[in-house]
Length: 609
Image (cartoon, rainbow, N blue to C red; front, side, top):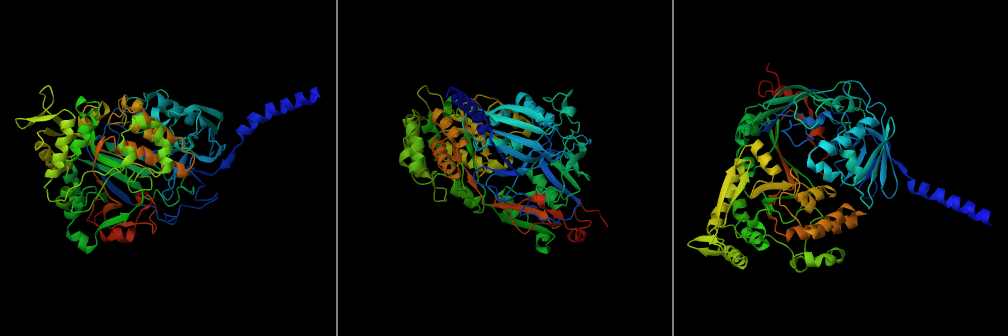
């Protein structure tokens, strides 16, 4: 009997870990559920697999650049530099969050997602002809976590270790606790060549064209003025299903301009080909030119179903002035969105009220049963209205008469200890209420200055300072501002990036994206719940709960959003018939030589006859 028990113990001892290690071999990974595209698929549905290759496309960027390293805090990296790199996997644009093998031929992963193995394609090559190996993958994750920008630390905080299992096999092990997103997240990272970076200072800016493995490489540049990429003719991955229909331009060039007004005039003069317009005024008025009527230039509104995220006036709660939520709530009553939308935006925008607007993730109405189960244990750390009211930003009738709103603001400011004395709002020590809004674009002055006029009626002195890109980035990195206008983009599958947006730990790290300086243990806990959501239904409930906590924290005065892309371009392009969930995919467009010929001499990317 004892021999039987000993044998049974041996079986259980050896079978346990083996069972835990049982994994499936996968061609793609979905955040929740199964990938849309089966193994052996030929291409994504939203591309033209027969798109012709060739031609030149010119685009514009504002400001300057002094670096070709987008992975560090120092410097301003050049537009488009990501095109020279490949990642382990590639996302589809018609699913909430699914990634398919790129550098990785296949993946191995257990049910609990506690680790993942990437099996690299042996045909993958760097532009110098050397193979992409597991050494490169291990090197990449070590170097970006050690010397990269601060967000990498948060994004990869759940990685326990990265191991080389063979020349073309690498394993990521994750820390305890469920985090379904981590296998997808590590697949996003651009992989760097170890043999190139060894001996070079990774954490210093450089204008030496770096070595990549992607579809493009740097061909030419002039610091701060332009950069040109050329398609790699023998690109190793050009026939992969995830790449079919993409990378159709032979040459991509970015020219740099001082500001938006110059960019628009340059576009109309034919200096570049394609622009995504973010100004409602310019969309309504700047392109009323004959070329639109003749069809030489196209204005296109392309609908999408991606999350709008949050754009707004962001309080820096590190400043004593903005640490009282009643003060933050009060100032929102002085922002007249409806008036701005009517007089400045040509009625194009919808008011944003959620950090996940335009998606099922947005919190509306009162908390559901599932949301309450998350929120109740945190009740003592959350505003009571999280449980009793639906958050809605203050509204007006659009006439500019906002006296009732200002009365509500005065009431809240009085409750917070502020009173009006000799026309100025002062605290108990007689100190005036004054602050600065830091801007990087003059475009926002036309919105901020009327906001300041309304604040002036409350006795508040608002100053607006517009600075150049370099100074703006530096001040953001050190949180040297009172208020900014910025945005947080959101996917349909939020996860680890939320840590760098909202958590207490992120608030203290320079170069992070917790611009508001939020330090709330309840929000920390809700972020972790989002990160560890086991399925789509749970993710939706947990994201809505987080949304409510952020909404009622009054960290932002919400701005507005669109549910379509505003694109203007010279009529030289062909594009796929299908628009995916995420909207326009310029990377799948191509140059139509017949259309292009009609523009000869009209635009710079087409040679004159």
